[in-house]
Image: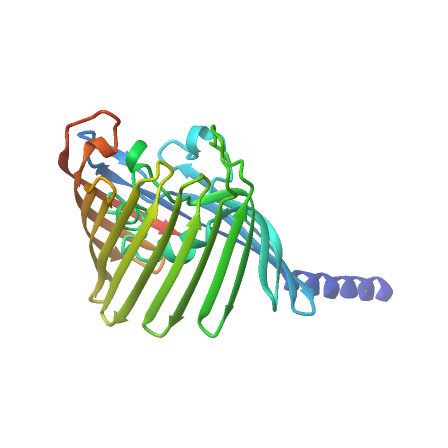
Length: 334
């Protein structure tokens, strides 16, 4: 009996050691509210922030080396359906596995591009969420197709990513196979992206460069933010050439202001322009308020007004517009 108890105790100790060396984190967010998108009269119950469910894991392999993995699913919380385009990509956020050590981290699979995560997604005070999001106008220029077609890619499949950070400095790079999902014509280039940034105290600055996939497209982005409590100021500039060889440029100015113990006011303005044709693509004003019910749950109210050159969005259209949109909702993060 004593031997059995001793054996169980030893097995328990080994199991405890193994579990201590490995961890899996379940995370995500659920967003639901009432809103009206810009240029639509339809009032909807809608997800304004990209609800998601994700898993991240790390296993200590010893000697400073660790195995890492992650995958993230996007879904529509109002219906429970897959949120990827056409429902074709279940792990639409990302899905990758790799190794991490003193050399940095190398992962393989489906990734966000380095320029997106480390620069383009760091500037918008709305974080790319809700109708007031400014990132798509002021940091990722272009819209629709033809002369004003968008440049940058947010994600790449069949890719390798490298990340390394030290003393506040960070460098990241992604490279992928030339044939990407949705590529229906000749795609001569391997999508490549690199970003470098520094974060220390109240300051963040970064620069990214990307060659998305086509023969002509390329884009660089410069961005930064600075906090002097209770205000954080943000600014970003993107410039590049799309695959129709049109030169596009965009910029964004924004701010977030803490109000009391639970509130945040968000504001910003973004402009995208076609420098080849000397025409505006879009101008958007975003205003919003967040009321934090806890560290993970908040209520939000956002408003946006956008002036759009409709020819930039719909081929052959000549009807420009200037319209409003709004969102009222709740978001829970876990």
